[in-house]
Length: 416
Image (cartoon, rainbow, N blue to C red; front, side, top):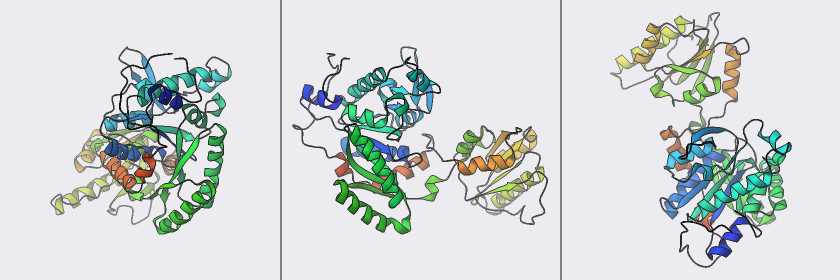
């Protein structure tokens, strides 16, 4: 497609004579909960505009999966796109929802001139055109902060400016540092001609919620005349890592009771392979994840015994809800694994390596940030409920007046 005009959105609106409603959700940095917010915001938009009338797109991706398109070609798709698409049963083409992904080595190809930013941007514009002309509202998700992609001369701010989008920035739930990070991202937005629609604060400490919401909203209004669109409190139970998450980050595999792969825990205990004299070692602790050597059959068998006993004495109305991560050369014998499965203790085995001791396993677990899985329905629904309750969708969905309501759909957009 040959693109003319100052932005894709402006071109489409001039051509069609109807408003193109779209916003980009971006962030001040990693781990601000952008994908989590995207899920909740998307569901809220669907409830307001209607099923099948809201589109989703992630123009720039990094972490990806391979999907096979109807024509047999394999296309790299950002993992967040996969989660949103499967969660909401979306049917739009994969290549439109995730037009550009940067796999390892891709940025070097851009610098070497093997891939041009103009070609990538044209692909993004084509995908946006397909989605935005068939939907009443299009939600785009940025990749990290506004500067991600700069080395390829195609960052989130450049995409927002080229498409003519207003941007909602997600910032961490504080005051000073949060606002400083926001200012840096806003400056990059302005450089590329994109406008700040508003801000959503995420993971705000409940004890400081009212204070942060009050001061942040006032300063946004004073400095930039921008609204605070949401203030989402931190909830530990939603942020807790699951067994499936740990298994993925550690490169482990389930060897028992995988049906509880999304179980989360209140505490974690490391039990050394050399043995411990701690008298509390064999206590029955509710909601505890134990990390130990696969040779510590004493610890494993005591967990099975404690769990079996509480199931029996409570007539299966109570459950310790524990879990095991075993590190070693080999998993325990089949008989022990069968007992773990019968007792209902989800267990992951991690192959021991010279550079990956039990201590390093625990360190990796401590640094891990849980990402959402579309099969983790309980967590997804709880997250989306929390977000919807704390977002101002009326202001988020508002846009500068342009003609009337969306009145037409294009089956095909004529290329010019």
